[in-house]
Image 1 (tube, helix red, strand yellow):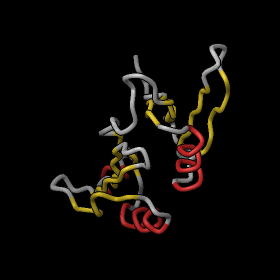
Image 2 (cartoon, helix red, strand yellow; image 1 turned 90 degrees about the vertical axis):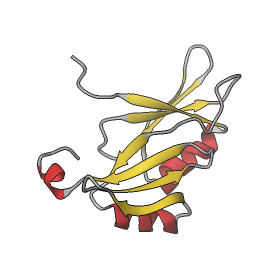
Image 3 (tube, rainbow, N blue to C red; image 1 turned 180 degrees about the horizontal axis):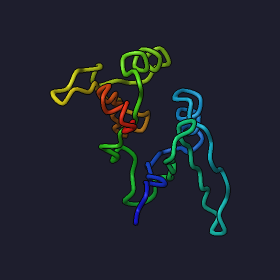
Image 4 (cartoon, rainbow, N blue to C red; image 1 turned 60 degrees about the horizontal axis):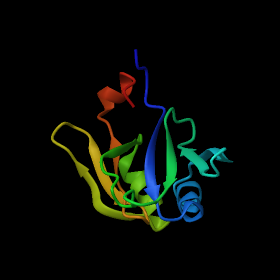
Length: 131
């Protein structure tokens, strides 16, 4: 049985620049930064105390930045997180907006054009442990 998502891969143009963005701007922890036997750098970041990580995968050939869409980051307070990240220069393409299903979401792009959703679940879902 699958119990959770361990990691997703996000294609980036420059791993060092992406690391600076995800670590310094978004506040993610570095889970792994190592060179594999094939010489490729394996770089994984994750939100503090997060279960899942993001592999910052270098662009090559047909795999180019800007293709990631639909990755959702959870927060207990979407508006406060939006304000904090906006003050750090995060490019929001949707302001925090109340959704028909009761949550609040905002959307942003990373410097490589990858698309992410920031979501605050309704209070009842937070109480039930779905955040």
